[in-house]
Image (tube, rainbow, N blue to C red):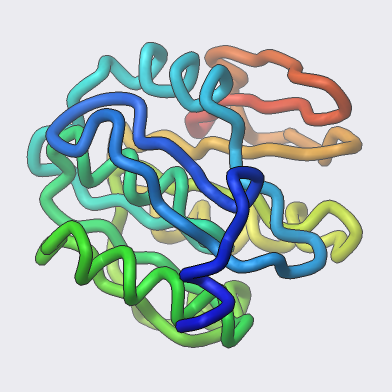
Length: 185
């Protein structure tokens, strides 16, 4: 708890819309953890239509949980956050409790292992793995089997993966990060 409680302003993420708008969530200083910036999240949720009423969402490499908490704040019926790093996992659980976010399920584990299992179908899947880990291509192909009809996948990346079989609905860039909203072609 001490590392989370003493987090600096750079170790906070603000929920930008929905029920918990303006709430600050703290996350630990973990190598490779880079929350999706406010401006990018605002763009993404504009693309998704602001409200995710009743939708089932998966944040496969949750990290700070910025995308998953934002989805829950905007009415998602269930949000699954998957994280393997211990400090980040602890912070996700603390932030879930702080908000009383019953619709959020925090899962301890490795993203690719989780998505290889029987985790059901999701309306929105967020894929933002650590860029240096080179996990996106594998995660994208595995996530395709868990995408509900009409579902969307959001990806963030440093270098563009092979998007064969996907239709890019929208895309943007913020600094060294690129991001796309996809659906099956």
